[in-house]
Length: 262
Image (tube, rainbow, N blue to C red; front, side):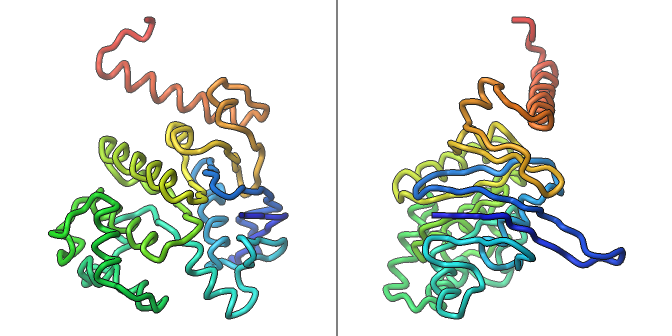
């Protein structure tokens, strides 16, 4: 479904060209949930944006199904419906002056889809929001409710691929669990192909079957989630990420007074 072949993404800076992503390659099968993990600034979100055509490639090739971002106008229209993205910040990704109804109606109008009222009601129900949310504004919703609306907006045009740019990192821990459970259910029911960007191995392990580890714009290792759980990793950077995650968990456990020697 997704094929990234030697992709390089280059930006201009005051000191000259800067490669945010260098020679990245991976494939995602139809119906698979694939993870991109790494520290901030490693190029994960930039690579995700390239898959939607929001960021051009300097070198290499990207294809999603039968479409290549930026190939031609007809392919771009088909790609926009087939590939949808959920952004990290639920406070910034929704128009503050649009009601939820307007937010969900806009992609339907752009793609010229019929039965708009029916589709909006069904989209809200699918993400666990009742009809009472339909005519509220974003500032009247919690962070988790806003992210549910963002997911509904992405799914309302019935895409085949869903790109998730750290969809839970701006949310409270309890709300993160609700959103992750929602995404896993939607993946199962719709058979979606997903790419999940995160810096959290626990989030990656909950949803993904395989993961690519990124550092300084490069993919340094690709492996299955089972190998991560068993800590059977090859690259030193991947090992350091696992150690950092373990250290964080230890501090959290110690903070609530649990004996970590058990």
